Length: 136
Image 1: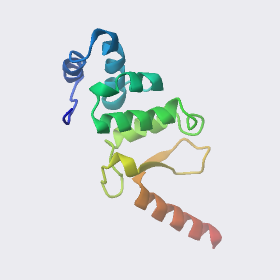
Image 2: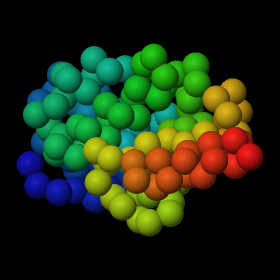
Image 3: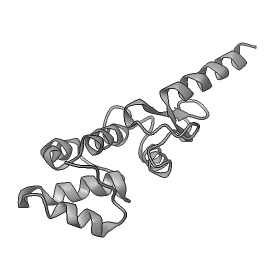
């Protein structure tokens, strides 16, 4: 599949029409999760509809799902997913957009639900500066 940019629900509906009947509902949920307002999804849906997703969409859906239904749910949850979407899947420092190297950074420790979406390099640099300040 080629690259898709979902601008609104009509774009999502066009993509859903390509799926077979048994996968239309799940595909709509996944695309709405990645591009729209849905903030929860079941991981099983992603694997069921993988043939209708681009590689990037598949990766994004799995990464986001880990924050709300996977082991990271208690630490991150829906607020992290909203932050990722608000950042438009780009590093908030350098605008890196390769989803494979983007991470969620806690601004005030593991229990506070304030996040920044960063590439691995920016994340490591910030963590290094924070540790250095803490040691002083």
